[in-house]
Length: 252
Image (cartoon, rainbow, N blue to C red; front, side):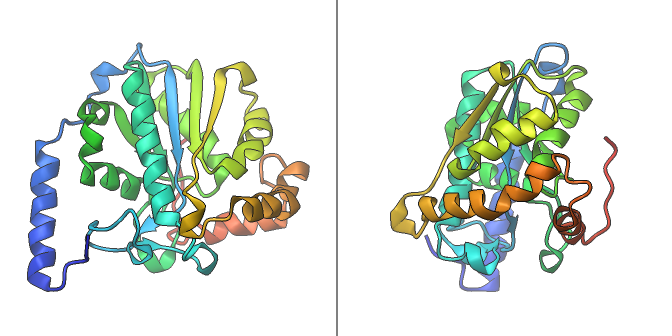
């Protein structure tokens, strides 16, 4: 798949996308209220930067990536996370699929990570599991992994009117300890009802899970060990500030 080479092609693809979305099933809150008990979270990691989604599963330039994320199979990983969330939701009609990620990159403009992931699912027509779209929504405020979990639980309550009886969360495998032990414990959610699903791209893409796992344990987890909620650590506080360039506030 190649990127459109002219403005005419880009406009044509945009019209095709709008026509596609108009033919897809719309969100139906009546399917969820008082019946949904399973929250499925796809933790988002990047904002869509391109206007076309052709090649979104392998083209770095379509995503707003930091230098350390480039040439590491990130596009394939992001799309795999989205697809896995759709598959899990398709197996459970009493689930709500939620993409979580805020407007984190100033250079990308006021576009949320979550809305970009939702657009990718539209682009792939939900992998022929179209009914899942009726039970899918975004959470557009999270600035880090702890907020991915906490804010998604709050968003579920906004929509369904009760808290989830079980949670499935999709992210990279090296973040398993972070989500299962630190974040889950911080919000006091029962371990027996929490399922972490790790999905990684193949090593042929440049993704090195062993290296990432090393840095996760050596550096990324340290602030959370001393500050489960990220309220006192200078590093975590500054990171949240940096990832909220449009000064948004949530209503949770």
